[in-house]
Amino acid sequence: VFVILVQWLWYASIARTNAPTNLVLWNTDTVTTPLVALVITRKRPTKRLFFAGILGLLGAFLAVGAYMPGNTILGCSACFTASLGYACYAVIIEGRKDPANVTVPLLLALEGVVASLILGATVGAFALISPAQLKTWFSALPHVGWVAFIGCNSVMLNAGWLWCIEMAGAFWTALAA
Image 1 (cartoon, helix red, strand yellow):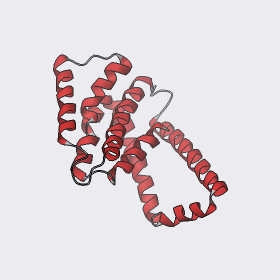
Image 2 (cartoon, rainbow, N blue to C red):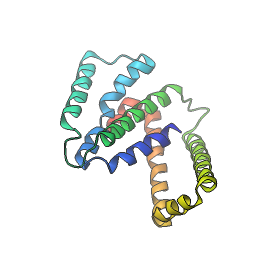
Image 3 (cartoon, helix red, strand yellow):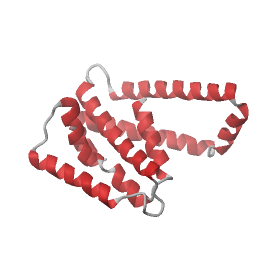
Image 4 (cartoon, rainbow, N blue to C red):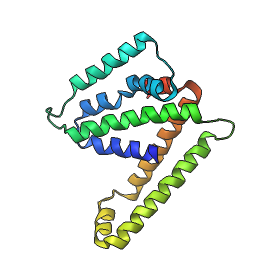
């Protein structure tokens, strides 16, 4: 569920920020991951890394703002929150996942089951509450091929993240992403 929320926030932020701002904010996970690891796992970064992270975050906040054309406070907040959520997700998975018991394909399958249940419940609720709104929602979806492409792309993206976290750890995954 957490991965779905992170992806949703990031995708929602794209329409509410300009491209450079979204890029800078999404890539703040390279500096927030060590800070998140400090809070969640008590894994202390070196003083140099901690100072660089603080400077990086300060630079990101100074470089972006809602006053720039195409940016909104909501969009900037959603993108930064999504990036921070990804950093939390990477640190938690790194510390909790036991590769012997929970493989990456199994973890992806469980995420898929949860996403399908949430999607089914949402569509069911819309069908009961506002069938007209459901028709509008479905008519706004792109062609089935594009929906399948986006779904496959998201699965491959998450598989890559999970395997990278398993092989290299949360910090190096944030740098690679």
